[in-house]
Amino acid sequence: MKIKKNKGYFGFKYLLLIYLLVSVVLPIIYLFSSIRGENISDVVTSVQFLPMLKNSVITTIIATVISVGLSFALAYMLNRSNIKFKSFFVVLFTVPMLIPSISHGMGLVFLFGDNGIVTNALGLNIGLYGYKGIIMGSVLYSFPVSFLMFNDSFQYEDYTIYEAASVLGMSKTKQFLSITLPSMRRTIVSSVLAVFTMIFTDYGVSLMTGGTDMTLPVYMYREVIGMMNFSGGAVVGVVLLLPAMVAFIMDLKNSGINASGSTVTKAYHIEENKARDIAVYIIFAIVIVLLCLPIFAFVLLSFVKQYPIDMSFSLETAKKLLSSGIGQYFINSVAIALLTSLVGTCLSYFSAYITARSKKSLSNGALHFISMLSLAVPGIVLGLSYVLTFKNIPIYGTIFILVVVNIAHFFSSPYLLAYNSLSKFNPNLEDVADTLGINRMKLLFSVYIPSTRATIVEMYSYFFVNAMITISAVSFLMNFRTMPLSLLIPQLESQSFIEGTAMVSLLILVINLLEKAIAFIVKKRVAKEEQKILAAPLEVEEV
Image 1 (tube, helix red, strand yellow):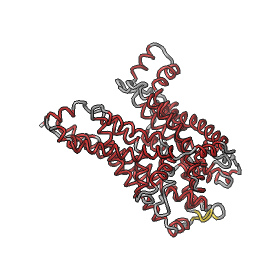
Image 2 (cartoon, one colour):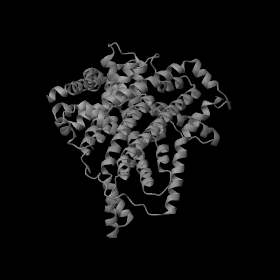
Image 3 (tube, rainbow, N blue to C red):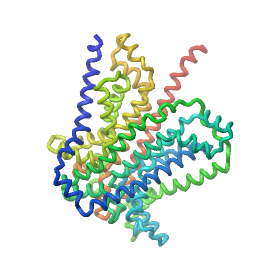
Image 4 (spheres, rainbow, N blue to C red):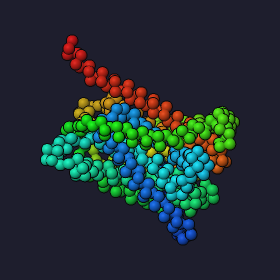
């Protein structure tokens, strides 16, 4: 009887498992199988391979240290001070997440390039191109992700331990070294691994600011896009995949560290200190100004006639973009983002429901592992894998293949959001439902979805924003009919139309800000409805 009731549930589970196997695992297997010995020899023994590998490793290590250090410092200051408008500062620190990585590179070029705004205004050339530019752009691109991880972890610190340390006479410095850093060990490791993988596999920043210091992702991009050398690109793709896989395995092992430290018995008490708070305000102001400089450059360049020859206000850039068909690229981007968000949220949520609310089994374990696997697959590698695997299927060359690759690329983080939320419910709910003859699907739609609406909104927002800004996963799969806005940036840059690249970057930022605003309003409304539901029994008792 039970099996019959949940037949649709189990059927959908196996369909989902097959879909993830085809969309995530199969392309990676095909990538490995397409490589021949001579391909490896040609790439590895080439003159430029070792210098490119060296450039990638050195810039990634330096940028990772700076990015993680900066994000930890900002999160620490935010959560250890009594400044106002903390939520507003969190939003400002995460604005760089709303534009493509290539836009960060372009923003630095606009500001500090040989003909940049700051360079011309101050007559000071910082020598942007090369390691310096790659590191600066990579830090801008990656630190918001690390900041959010640290900021979240600081919310769960238990002040009881610090109280005991203070009673024992332990200094603030010793408390930081003996309590704070050890409690953040898991987050620090995860942050380092996430940021390292992001930077090592990104080609957007280094394509714009690398100059003669080429990195492996840029080489792969140029080999495949420029020379149609899929074999050479596949070899480099495997090289890029290996560190990401190592990071993924290390992060899985790290997941057990401090796992029990998430229960808070007492919220952290922050002492009054005006001098400290003023210092934090000043530091935050400096950081925000630096973060907003590229956006300022986008606004300025979008509405001048021709930089730097004629700086008068003009709508010429908008007219040129409209006449060149930017409307179609805009529609493509929004359509891809909406479809990715809708389908991706449904699939990742149901996958999390199965793995978080079902008993352990081989199929559930496999589903959980594959759902997490996309964290280990860089977008540029996944995109090339899709070219090699699906180039002969009917949806290849359409928007739908871009939607599928985006879902596969961004699947893990929304999945984890839903998995963590669903794991918090009473573990006996399913047993009670089975006893009462309630179908699993009915339990999902009547209990879990209404109770996790805020999480679902966050999942939808994550898919949408990332689908709008991605350039890596879709680079090899798009054509002129399906090209999204983000890939218009390198095309316009190659035509030296810098005003156009600035306006496209600004347009993507505005779209994502609007989406974030809508998500914020929806989540606020959901929170109010939940408060009303909680208050309802009290009102009845009073009557």
